[in-house]
Image 1 (cartoon, rainbow, N blue to C red):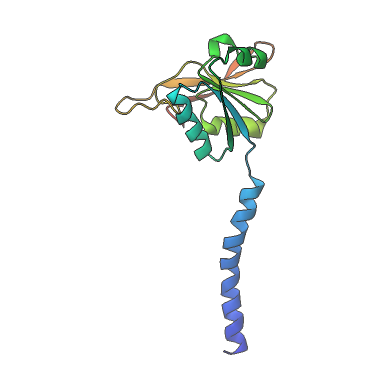
Image 2 (tube, rainbow, N blue to C red):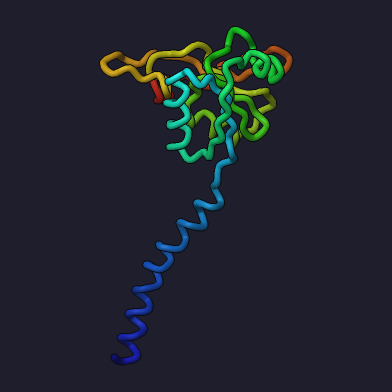
Length: 161
């Protein structure tokens, strides 16, 4: 093999090596914080929502409890926004079937707030998918410690609209 051929091989190998190594660095740089989810052990949709956020890259710790009311009160979840599970991540509270992209946006923007909530259990929201039933449109609400609330995002199913 001549010197020019070796250089050509090495020059061709460099982009391949970079393609194999660089994604590992960018993935590590974009690591998502750990989420703790408190859920009722008898609730099936909570498991569906947890699968959704895990698929989006969030590491999750689950805590099962049949009585989440004291936790929701301590964390300041407004009663009208209460749902079946409550999560904590990055200093925020996540209540109910909030889509993973809304959580990622919250963590990127870091607004002054207590957290996000999807009140109730809208059909088609992550974890509430029902085959053959069209997804509902619902709001993801940003809530604060002083009882202020505003629409943070609007979704139909798991898609922002």
